[in-house]
Every structure is written in C-alpha cells, then in structure tokens.
Image (cartoon, rainbow over all chains, first blue to last red; front, side):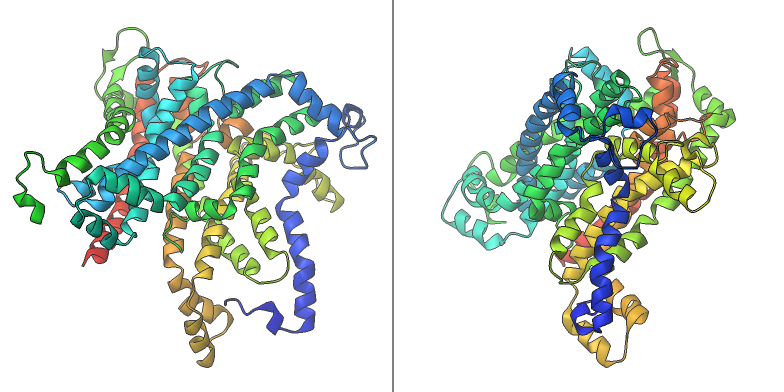
Length: 282
Length: 300
C-alpha cells in the first residue's frame, strides 16, 4: 500500500493522523457546514448580525417547515423526480441495447458509431442549445417535463453507451458463443444471457444518471419556465427570490434541493463509484 | 464468420445489431449530432429566433473579433482551463492522505467526496454565501486574523477566481475518488520491490505509483477539461456574469446573447457556441485518439 500504512509508523504519527483527519474534514466541508448552521437559525439572528455566535433559538422545524409548506419547493422536487426517473429508465434501456450491439457484434462502422456516442457526449451544451430548443418548441413540448426527459435520454445515451459497451466487452465471450452453438436466437441471448450479467452496470449507471439529471441546471433553464415543469435546480432561484435575503430559509431550501442525490450516493456508494471511474480504474 | 453462409434471407449477425442500435442512434442523431450542424448553419444568419432569418455570411464571426465581451470570455475560459487542472494534483494529494486503513476511514472518504454529489447550483449558492462581505464565513475567518474583509464576488479582478475556487471544490473531490480507486489497484509487489531498492516518499510516488495511476490520471484529465469548458451553472448562480461582465465565459456569454433578457440573438450566440465547440473539439479529438489507440492495443 502507498503511502506506508500509518500503523507501521511511530505512535506520534498515528496520533497526529487521527487528529488531523476530522480537522481536515471540517476544513473541507466548511462552506457546507456554514450553510447547515444558517438553516437552523431564526430570522432574528440575521437582523441582529449574530451570524456565527450561538443561535438565539433552534429553528430547524420552523425553517424546514416553511420550505415544505409555504413555497413551491415540493412541486419543484416532484418535478425533479418526474424528470429524473423516466430519464434514468430511458437512457439505461436504450444504452443496454446499443451497448450490446456495439460490444458483441463485429461489423463495419462499429467503432465509428461508438466514437460518435463518445464525441457527442463531450460537446458543449451551447452548441446544441438553439436547435434543441427550437425542436422542443416545434413539437409542442416547450416547458413540459416530457420535453426535458426526451432530450436528457438522448444526450445521456452517449455516456451510457460508452459505459455499457465497455462493460459488455469485458464479459466472457464464450458464454455467448456457447448460446449460439445451442441455437439460441440473438435477442434471447441479449435477454437471458447478457442482460442478467449487466446488473452491476445497470445499477452503477442508474445512480450516476440520477445524480447528473437531478443536478442539471442548464437544460432546465433552456427548456422550461415555470413551476409547472421546472425541476428543483431551476426552481431554487425563484425560491430564493421569494425569500430574498432570508438566509435561514434559502439555506434550508438549498439543503433540501441537494439532499436526494446525496441520499442516493450514500445508499448506493459502491455502484456510484464504479460508475464514476467509467469502469476503467478497477 | 460461419454465419455468412447462412441460408436465411436475413443474417441475424447483421440485423440484430442494426435493430438494437436503431432507437439509440436515431435519438442521438436527432438531439445531439444534427443540432451541431444546425448550430453551425445558424451562426451564418442574423436571427431573433422567431421571424425570418437573414443570411449574413461570416459577419457574426467578424463582429466577434471586435467584441470586447467575447475577448474577456475567451480569456476567462483559459483561466478556467488552467486553474481547473489544479483539481488533479489536489485530488491526488487528498487521496494519498486518505489511503489508510484506520477505523472510520470509509466514512471520511465518502464525506470528502460529498461536494461532488451536490448540484452545482447549490455549490454556487453555498459559496456565494460563504463569500458574502458581511454575513459570509470567509470574512468572519479572515477578520479574526486581523485582515481587511474582502468582497470576492464584487471585485472584477477577484470574482472569476472566486467562482473557479467554488468549481474546484467538487472537481477535486471527483479526482480524489478516481485516485483512491486507482491506488487500490496499485500492485503491492512493485511497491515492496521499490522499497527494497530504497525508493521512498516522492521518488516512490513519481517512479512507481504514478505510472500505475495513469488510467486514473487520464480520466481525471478528461473530466476536468470538459468540466472547465462546460462551466455555466456556477457563473450563472454566483455572479450572473458580473461584476461588469468580468466573470463571463463563452458558455455563459452565448446563453446571455441567445436567450436572456438582453435579447434573442440566435445567430450571434451560435457563432460563440461554434467557437467554444471548436476549442472543445481539440480535446475531444485527442481523447478519441487515445481511446482508439487503446482499442487497437486491446484487439491485437
């Protein structure tokens, strides 16, 4: 292991390492801790300029209650769910198929199509913005959740295909050969042989895409307008203008908005990290 | 292949991949590939997004050359690119710090990674509050050290660096997790061999560890460069391009021109997008080339 395990070092080194760990963590998360502290303060603290002293009272329920019951936040959150979940399902389903086609079969243009997906996945959003917005408007899906979902599914298929194809590539090819010798139809090979083996990849991609889409801001601004369809990332700006300069409520609001992907991450950590490293770093 | 002699009219070895690819490829063409071409086309027009588009040839690009705001944006993009790369050594440093097996280290690793999972919108909000001149924690800290309070986001010189610092926070976390996974896979025998040869500390890191971390470094480079050029959310949330347009980057300036209260100048906006795309294309081409080499190496 590198660096040398701390257990093999002097007692002093071990003690200082143990002390340094929480200290470093607090430093690292300082901006976030500040927001968390803000979110439980009463309004009075801000008007009195008591930003960092002891809170004069503990207003966790009051502040978060306001976020949930006196703002559009629940609607935005629900919109986010209705945009994120179908996107995850759509992108993963499509890329299971493209990944299978590109990972198993050898044909002319295979690598070309694969590279088209990778390249498309890297382009700046702005080069797509005007035409995609036009397209969405012209099929009557501007300011709808479906309009956002369709674009996200298409765009995420690029990244997902990269991931799925490499994953399928690494599967033992003998399995498929054996099934072919048995005379199993190609689509049944996909469904009964390959798909069950892809479970870890599907899990990894699902968490990852969930986070990406939940956190998307740019397309939410480009393709939606009001609380009818806007996800929480875009909604939070209207939330903040509703509670302008009320830092305790804005803090509580942004913590609520950030929470679902965080929960997803802590629940599915192993899969998440496997996805992030693109499976390239085992 | 043996199936080439199949007597069936349709060869399943060809039709199956075709059918499996069809929905994904069509979707991707419609929403990603074709729009790229359309944007190129629109950049030759003067168009407000509603009425008739007027062909102006290269005039949008000529105007870009004299546009001071474009110059500032381009220059800021360069700052982003260069400074964002700091996330790679910083991530490596934290990964080395955390690559131990003490109790609770798993939780520490997750908590260090945490900023990456939060949306950039929230990161932007968190940092803009952190920087607040009166209420912000940053000034609370530096004034206790007897320094003058600073208004990071209100200062045209400092603002961009303040936004980049906010971006480095999640990006460093991403690079850290890449390196942590990479360090897990480092061959212990080579480390032992290195130790026997008397390699320690920096020399060990440079000659034995880093070469084995190359795949992690490559991905860290890819995601960091893409992330730097994609920066939009943070700027939009933290400064909205200001003060005095000093924090604009191409992605933000394009949005501002094409789709904001300043008017719908789709043609001019598309020209900006094309420039950004061409910058990105240099990196994309390099990435694809590296991947292609690996594909070839993997096959033979």
